[in-house]
Amino acid sequence: DAGVTQSPTHLIKTRGQHVTLRCSPISGHKSVSWYQQVLGQGPQFIFQYYEKEERGRGNFPDRFSARQFPNYSSELNVNALLLGDSALYLCASSSRTGGYANTGELFFGEGSRLTVL
Amino acid sequence: QQPVQSPQAVILREGEDAVINCSSSKALYSVHWYRQKHGEAPVFLMILLKGGEQKGHDKISASFNEKKQQSSLYLTASQLSYSGTYFCGTKALTQGGSEKLVFGKGTKLTVNP
Image (cartoon, rainbow over all chains, first blue to last red):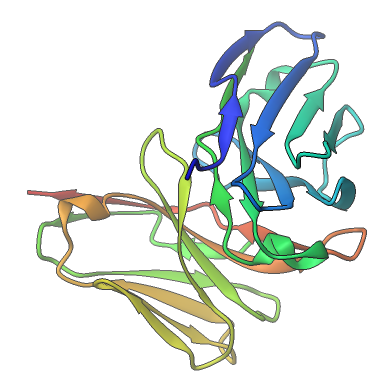
């Protein structure tokens, strides 16, 4: 079975642009979470979606948004990019349900590495 | 509140043991351990759900002391494949009331031949 897949794997943007990152969860997983990992730090929670509804949001500005589609795939959008948005963006899926899905075993994708110049 | 991990980095020779600690200033209800190899996705190791619980995964085990608000990860007879950065995560609530994981900054483990 395929694991969590993310695209693109690498991308370079300039300040002020916007970016869309995509994630496909493991088949059968209905929960998708997004994390930002800055170099040398642990992953930081951005969003969790379950059954197409936002179930949790971390301390990120409104420039960050996400959505989940009927097939449970998800995309993360970041507008008005800043240099500080340069990071590895990780998607994780879980077989757990609802608002508790984020604290069971998480299956991470390999991430999308965003560089903002 | 981000959990604090120690040490920040450790270098071992194959076959040596290591301990990685994770502590929190807030009450801990569960502790989650992940390993991330360079350029790869974090991989789940184990969850400890209650005080006094101990778990093992191959030669990697962990304990959870609820009263001391800390957990320790034990790597016994380390192998080259154990190299990577180890993260502990603790449960917290989001603004919407759902649960999220808050990860520590990680402990970089290097195992040399």
